[in-house]
Structures are given as structure tokens and as C-alpha cells.
Length: 165
Image: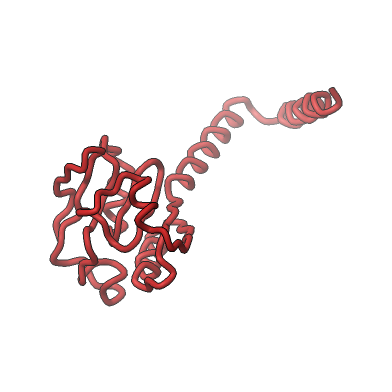
């Protein structure tokens, strides 16, 4: 009961403090904060990688440079991570990342991840199968991706070209 009363008192204090501000201003501020929180959440990506793989760190740096927050977890059970997230063996790469309900497998450019989050197709995720030599994390920093496809894949393992480099 004491906790509920403290919550009610705190809410009341907030209401009293806000009395000087116009209601429309408070609503706009609340909406802006909600949009900012959503944008930050959409930009956070969780990456699982083998402790022995260095190119994955290069890909994480590529995403950070594009404005993403990347949380990296080193794991020795990458096959289990891929399987649990619906990545077919034929579409696998060296690392698996998760962002806003999607799987990003391998060296997918940040621009494709951004496009995925904007378009929100009904797919499991994107993959750059294998380890394409001219992909972010595998190439010289600042070089454009070249010579490979990024594929969109569904829950049945069907894949189609999402981007061509």
C-alpha cells in the first residue's frame, strides 16, 4: 500500500509541475520522446560471434559508423545460435545478429539493415552467405561493397535477392 501511495504522490507532483506548461506542448514532448526511444531501440543490434573471428569485429565497427549500437556476445555454439534463429546452413556466415525481430546473418551492409527496418518485409532476415571478400568487415575500411548478393530469407529457407553489389 505504501508503494502505491508513493506512486500516486509522485504522479500528482508531476501533474502539478506540468500545470504551467500548455497541454499541447506536453503531448508533443511525450510523442517526441516515444519516437526517440523507438528509434534507439530499432538501431540496437545484438551480434553473436565466435571468439576467434576478427572480421566480425570489422562488421560491428561498420554498423557503429552507420549509427547503430552493437552489443557483441562471443559464443562457441554458433551453430546452435543460427539454428535457434532460423538460419539455414546453406545461408549461414560467420556471425549472427538480431535487430527488431529480424536476423542479420553475416556481412550485410548497414544500408541494407536500415532499408529492412524501414520496409519491414515479412521475412526472417537478411544474409550475405559465406564471407564475401568485398563486404563490410572483410574489405578495406571505406571501400564500397562489391561482387556479392544480400539475400532475404523466409521461415522455409527460401531466399531471394534483396541487394546486389
